[in-house]
Length: 499
Ligand SMILES: Cc1ncc(COP(=O)(O)O)c(C=O)c1O
Image (cartoon, rainbow, N blue to C red):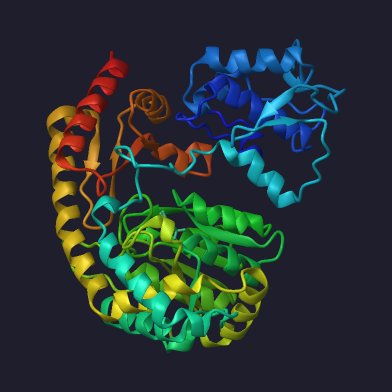
């Protein structure tokens, strides 16, 4: 078992292979920031360079260069017999200027009083960021946005602008446009087995905004929240921004292991799960675990946040209904996104909340966002009611299944046993596990230099000791040529690392 660097869980170093800064620079920045923010205190011991290198899957040289810079700038000291410790006289300010992630040069002399939650997020900004711009193979979590029916969408927007917008241009119901809430309630009842009244549907600006809103409503600082290990960092960020402490609960082939959560942390305030298609590993949560989770939530007076992010795309196996449909006690809050079916920049999603939460969520939404832009809500109502939505899903399901098959074939042909691929029955991505000692971080970093966009599986784990090396590969957004060429490059990279 790798030796655990005691301070790592606190500051959670995760490297972004695609970032413009070198890995050594990223390590330096994480530790420096942790010292400046007081997370690491004077006299505290850092792990050895070798331990840190093996935890992060980088070379010893990389960590030793990062430590050398921290030493030169007085952040740490090296003491015989004690290793590297945080220095007693931490420089209060770094007088050099720094470049922000948006590319702006910031003077660090400028006062920047920030909230705890912003400082936490700033520290973790080196996490593999969600890619922006045109998707490059194999960015995950995005559909074939090039084949969305934009012309039709534009016509509907124009029609609604003329016919309805003038009458609804003032502030509207923060919970969303009523006919859209009705259309979504009907759609979810038919396709996902969700049981709700339209009043329980709250329109939000995408899944992430839904998580943020729920975190505001349900969590106090230091509340405990179960999250899947590995899991989706977007939801983690929202919970952390409300001050929650995340408790990673491992997933097995049956999904989140409720018995482990009960044994280690019975009194959590909530649990976040992806029961229909675990993110990122892809398994379906078994009925037994679903029932165990519902039972725990009832006994612990806890909430369950069901993230049903890409359930529209199931290619084989039996259709999986939502956990919400099994809930008789009003413990489950269902979160849906339109990013996968429509396109991510639309920024629309919805919550289905138990009746007792409707009023408070509406009040908080009023203060949080006022409401979601109305024009897109009007157009989406027509898109759903006129059958375009269902047709688009049907067409994309066929296309994505084909693209999944192409990717699986190409990986089998070009990488063979170098990548152990689980063929997913659903969703927009697959996961391939890398045999030891191949490092997913190094492979993703090299792939970034060669025009690919790979997400290392290890970056989906909170606990360094649980990390598995693998690649999360999206397939839905890429045509056959892009898939073949991307896999060819990937095979070349992996073969170099195997030498
Ligand atoms: C697991 C998971 N949940 C929720 C979302 C919600 O995304 P958005 O904020 O775009 O609606 C995503 C998007 O990638 C996701 O991967």
